[in-house]
Length: 335
Image (cartoon, rainbow, N blue to C red; front, top):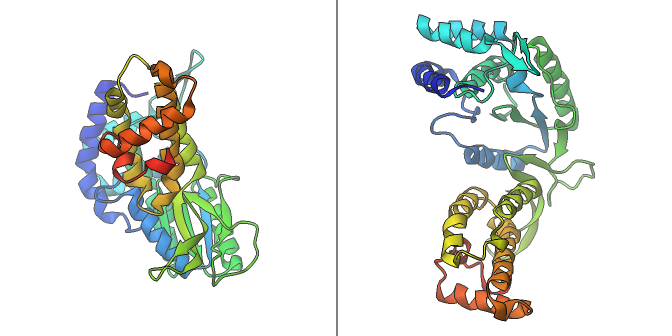
């Protein structure tokens, strides 16, 4: 892992080379770039899934550990002219690492946890994937966020062909597709009614799959839309559980709100952009956690779960600004 001084030096070099590298990156590369976000990638993917029937979802196995130094340095020297920056980048890449008391020399991989690693990996994949797609499949839209990517295709056969070509391309660049995280998905909805094994995929914490969607006139139909993924919901619940709030009876509800609200606010802003109703299970879990805390905190609620719930319902109505999810109306019945 880089030391504090290494992190500072890497940040200096990153800020130096980023203005030279950023203009060459293509529009559909979203990861770790200024003025681009994961939500931008989710939004453009949402629209493309409506237009294209098939998606090749791919993941590059161990990208940060397997980037070939020779190929990466070739790309860096093409765009970075500052000699001292080149010297430092090469030193960081080739610095040996210790494992089980043994010193291991490295000829691949970027600095683990390094500030400069994301921009170096973006440059590598710019040549490995982005420009290759533009050159060989100019008619197929794609989207990449770091080592996760999607290619939208018109037919299953086209998706299979792109997958095979991508496998060969990555092998040329000494990388490989992740065998279990790479698959071909059918975008099934009310108009696309084919029967296929894979009709959903996860991308950047969102699950894309067929869902019942309400039109402006109130009518319902089956659309293909993103919502927070089950794995992301599980991770959020685990984060709350790790706080051990149910047992912290020595603190007040305001203290718990101060601890929880930054987390909730960030999750709601990100996962609530598309299909915000899918976050209701998280809100309910938060309310259940608060009810469990109240039962431990106050003797009068200890043997009466219903009274604890009524207490929180009343509080949510009188002080809705205490918790972020109460402010957006997730209270009352959802407690």
